[in-house]
Length: 532
Image (tube, rainbow, N blue to C red; front, side, top):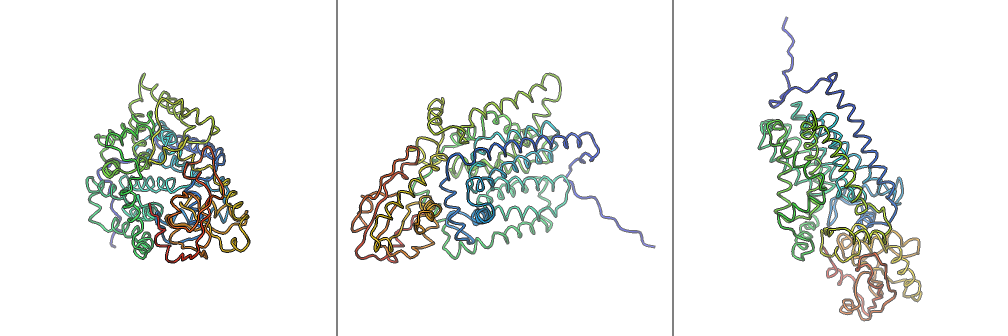
């Protein structure tokens, strides 16, 4: 009788055997997971508590507008954020709390994922808890988990892919590359920066023990799955002439973004990731490139690649933020090991207390804890100047992520007053034109309650949606100046003056009424495109 064949052991890439489920280390990690969940829960409650204090952020208004035009792509983003906005709007409504529950949950999820990443690399209770707390206390992530934007989703996909890579290293189960492909493909549909993380992961594979996986089919099948999921957006971009690349070229030529030197970019990370977190993520780099962390070095190379890429390409200062939880997880492991004995054990509570204290001091910059007046006084009392990602952000009294929440309803009410004062025959043919997607989005969100028509605009995807039924005979214009409109309108008058003390200056421009004796919207529309 022929003996039964058994499968050989899975490849572990020279990895040591993990602790069994019954081992003390495994029990410690199970207890630590409860602490990780507690930290994640506290972060979730904090964000939900302040979700509705100010108003809608400009990007949020745009995403809600995109949700009314579901498609496989938009000028400035892939489609996932619009789909999520559509789902939220049709299940929970479009209140601030409903909308911002998404990034709040994403932030809690990121804390849990970071704890799991640390556990996968060998962390016990202290290392997992420290990694989770460090991630929860990253200042720039506090902002990202407050607002409904692509950034909150982006981090989940990056860290989820990192966890899959670690599982492949530890178990040798190369079929997990299929799940990497699924997560990466969805990540590409959330934000194109997923490609940067993917390139970094490829570098990590090429420079480490995972290189042998290239000789087998699973990694290639995973890549194929990611490409297949992303394919509809590629087709959309081809059909529309690659608008995203045109947008990026316009931004570079226009000098919209603040560009930093390499040292300046690194200095910005100290503030954005947090000064207390600096030694933690640096310890993570040491771990990745030390003998004890050698098997996990692919993620170390991924981190280095992403950071160097954004420095070299002069990306916005926060673009590299999603890769830092990986380094914080590794740093938690090294600090845990350094503080295992003797007086070094005091390092754990000291770091934890410092993280909480410094985060508490900086929290009013990230969440709307203070009133706008108190926030202004708080910022003036700071011994440093807050960084700005775009030059125009410096014009507001308060940080951009707060300033772009003010003035929307007041603006729409003013537009409604101007609209109602028009003679009935003019009102029937009047259109409302937003000079940027935010003021157009505000009209689309708040306008129905005042009997206003949907807005039109030339900014980003609003241009693709066209002029609707507008004739161009009478146009109520937002965010422009009389001097600029005089070059294209037969007559311009100021319909209302806006003066919100905390809104961005551009949103305080007057509501203008433009009249044309011989309107031709179809002929004018190509000139109205503003992709920047």
